[in-house]
Image 1 (cartoon, rainbow, N blue to C red):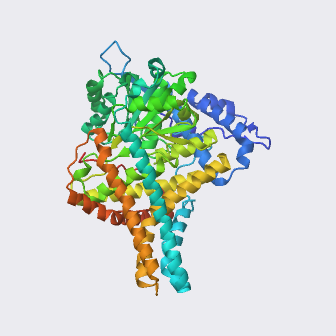
Image 2 (cartoon, rainbow, N blue to C red; image 1 turned 120 degrees about the horizontal axis):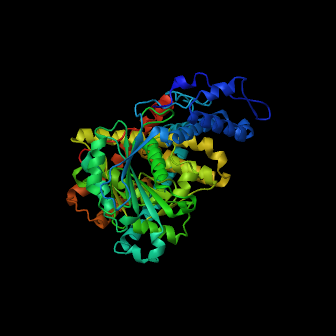
Image 3 (cartoon, rainbow, N blue to C red; image 1 turned 30 degrees about the horizontal axis):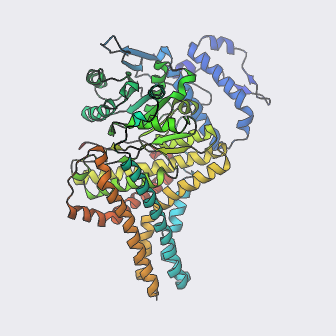
Length: 605
């Protein structure tokens, strides 16, 4: 059973007069009467939507109208899927003394869900090639080749300007290193803290938690390890575990039964399995659409009242996540200490990638250390964006219509979407315990490097894609908040990550081969900046030396190998920049067609 195209061939088309009122054809009532009840309700919702939004939409740009229409249809599709006609709830609990553990799926999983709304647009793979992410490309084109042509304009200007720009990049790395070291020390000083004793027990027990894990084709052993880290929480009785599979997941029914048998008596308040249907219109298969379906279905089954939404925290995670045993307690402590800022704050635990990281290649290990450094020193302190594993209040999720199912970077898209809903820049608060996340891996060095490049490409395309979304939606965010966040995002993704490594290469080649009569002091300044930048990379290795021990991770890295990885850091960063350069031009040429979610392999984990 499903809503098919044939059911909508005779759908009445809503036309609108100048005052925004709906005008239906004379036989509309007869046509509506022949349609399913769900469709009649959706048509009425659509009519009300158009009447309420008529005047506002007249002032919107065409791009914003297109995004709004897509969001509206995605929201209505999600509402359809939650209705009993399309949803099957199956109990798999043997223990009658607790809540039922259930599996939620569509009744007819192979049916193509189509709303038939007049605002519906199919997602065309190559549409909107001219997108705002072109600003990233412009920055690359302006900054990277600058050292090659400026000497031909003025040699003197060249040997002053080239080092000056390089100095800006080095200064960015200094700031990041300082903040990263500060936040790493916060983690270290909280290593033995019992967060359960920081607040009255009754007050902490009021805060409930939903852990949402999106799964596809990951090995069941890997999924089990991640769930076990949630089951090991000191406050596990406050946790509802939501495990969200895809309809195309192989052996999903057997996996649900295995996981329920393994974790059914681990102390969770409840375990809920959801099966996200395939072929839903205006969705990109991936974590965004799966998470959106999973959290909506889980919240519906939990029957959480509106007044209690501020007391429910949702944590989204991956199948390669291992939580600190006090993550729930530390998150609850931070939330209560901050005064329960339900609509203003997201919570990010620093991610470390030391899951068998000592056994992986120099490319993967160095990237993992730099990612941790950048999260500690940039993403969290400057409120740029959450990443992969983060927490938010159910109030914020509901007000922001949960997750946009038509994008691939659910962490950044949620932040932007929710800023538009709340009308303010959202704060990202540090959870003072680390979380272990799995790096990319492969069975050979070659496949590992291929997976590394694949993930770097996906991240870059995702960042470019959500930047376009931000520009379109920025008019709904206060100008100052939108301006500060937009500039910070461009500096971090567009300048530091995409152009920093490439500019380092072109500036060095220019100073060595093109610029003439460089003063000795300028040469020493260039050498000094290289040394300072290497010191900032050293901070990443110093942090790695003690932060992994906070999760009782034992690694075996010989000092000579560690030194080799340290020396290779700028070359890994340069290689990463080349992948980003390719990805930026790929999304510029092919547009939305390349904006797809492809999970990286985790076979070694």
